[in-house]
Picture 1 (cartoon, helix red, strand yellow):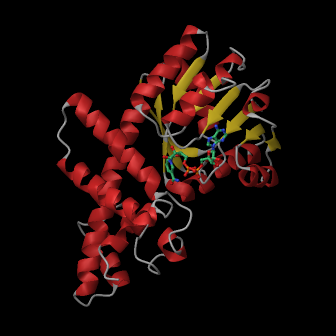
Picture 2 (cartoon, protein in one colour):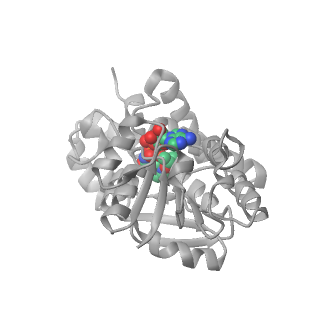
Length: 296
Ligand code: NAD
């Protein structure tokens, strides 16, 4: 069993760290939030006093932070850069969703100092993190991918090698742009059906079994009460924040700009999430974008 540092114990990182501890690993956990850290300790992790303390003697360092600015600060530019403290034999696995360019830059800085840093963003939501069924999209060399795989398998079901450094983040940006399009499209269709007299649960079931079926309908229905386990049925608390979806659509915009790839549907979805966030809904789960369509 390995010693693993885990930094960032939020909606996703918390259950991921728990699954590693449940598999018998020693998980040295740290989060700026005392509440998140206390919860991780209840779930079998060992409390670290700081990020630097967490990486002591760690064979793997895993981070699950909100955005690229947090990742770059943690490893490179902050007050106590972790690249100064990590054992060169360790493998650093960043699971946060960040800019491919930042992932490549941190990987290059790490490599220049004899350290291995790979990007491994995830898909599957909080439910997937809890169940240990996440999909990982990994940007790494073949050798690094081989080393990461046994650890990732304790947190996920599908482990994909997308390509070299940064490739995991490119795959993730494409996937989440698709998710944003599917979620807003699903909200649009459900609202139209309900306004025309249909029961949202019946319409959801019809579309699920028909050509409109998609992930949002299968596991993340945005209409309150249709799916017990979905954030919509608990006032859109927890889950995947609108703020984070808005950030991810920004990553897709950047990629489209750099590669001159047209993304009219992704741009429309981004406009909707931007409006939803501006109305004060940033902290709610992203499926609450349904409320843009519903009458007050
Ligand atoms: P979250 O806000 O719930 O958790 C982030 C955690 O990081 C917080 O607990 C915060 O205190 C901690 N943190 C921030 N800076 C830190 C630092 N310097 N040191 C230690 N801890 C620090 O976010 P989340 O929903 O868990 O998402 C994390 C990442 O996973 C994001 O990049 C997100 O886009 C991605 N993601 C989220 C989901 C989802 O469904 N929530 C799904 C796939 C991917």
